[in-house]
Image 1 (cartoon, chains in turn cyan, purple):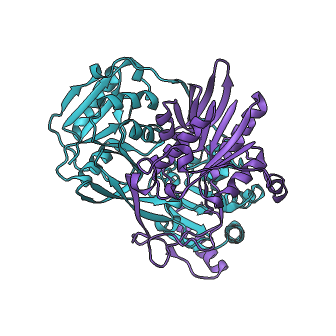
Image 2 (cartoon, rainbow over the protein chains, first blue to last red):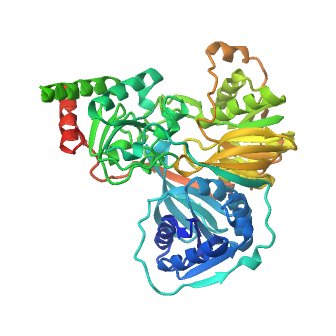
Image 3 (spheres, each protein chain N blue to C red):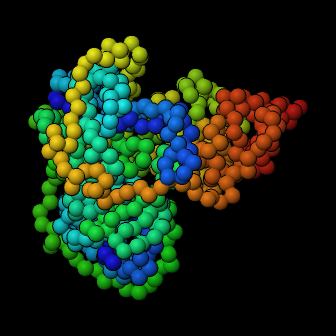
Length: 328
Length: 263
């Protein structure tokens, strides 16, 4: 069985949720695995992070280097190329960083590459069978991954439940000396923080959220009218921002805002995981979609197969009617 | 600037419901509507906008079959000067590494300063750009949301990271960038535009033209193989409302009110 390594994302000395999830994924691959966590960074933040990792790992590799104070995937790829032994399995979170790092790393390590894995099906000899999704989550696929020259596998955030924490002391091995001088043709300059907007969708208890199904810019008004009637705010999924129909600050998802409403009306939203990742706090989800197979119906509480351009005005007039009655 | 954009023809999920075929080993491909992979279209638009500013030309390449020529034509109608088709029966069942190996030979036949891909295709793997960069030993950045040309063979780019934030970096040319949707507004191409480029020859290259062997591409070289497609047995899922539109709207309103959403 190949040795398993996990890449630890961390920020302000705190390991990301994925640290525990990758440990759980490693155990799913091989029950007897003792995965090694690789934590890369610099300074006291890295020390604190390594100490925290003892909750989930008994073996930690630490690489401390001033050049790694910001996680530039191009530099970290060079670090991992040098320290990960040939034939290993390396697990990396499937997020903006993993997408940046993992495919190239698989080439550098001459390893197989599978991305965005949501479940481990079976391990037979040198073949690992995993589950991933295609077509924005509309369909799943079993994929066989040949482990004979190792593998780089990215794991979908939230797909594996963190296991029980342990309190035993971990061995922290300092691998910094193995890395040498680091340089890259891509240099991090700064992080541009998202602009504040007029409406803060993270604070609203009710969101009328629209997706590609709204079809055109003029139709956004249909959602706004419903939101006004409800006293809610309008949020959206990525295609609506891409088309410039709403500002980026209205986008719910891993690359947008994380929202915690009580009620979430998903209107014409297919339900890709990047979108669902932005919905927290277990809200009551009502989904309206023309496609009865839309993945959103798997996570919603209530589903309606209908054209939202017809349904939303109907709902708006119902709410206005009720408000009118209440006002009298 | 000489720019190569790698594109792919995919089933258009906004036009199709993706379903299993009767034997369950593939999706039902009858009557599927195909189009250009959406992020690739943004990548081509970005390349055209760069060339409009600093000069040069845009080439588009795809790995596939003759059927895939239509997406090359579409992108040429947008303004790409050259189309390149990499087609060979040996290429079928290539994994991501195989596709990147094929594209690498195409890059090496040209003299490109910048190589763009879309961030991901219908399989959501988001893999080929990063693999290609590593094979060429070029710098790479994914999820790119803006590109500014600097002097001295450099670009200033932003990447999309979490929470709507963006990461600003400088990157040396030549490099490979994977382009995120929303970076620009791709121009519309009508049938007339496509007809205008219909007679431009598109050279096709096979495995032997590119010096590729079955050890590098195709099923034999693939370390990763899709076994089947399936629809997972899920939890309870949503309770589906089956009334008339008016009844459904009434029920939704009552539910929203009951959940404290109507104050």
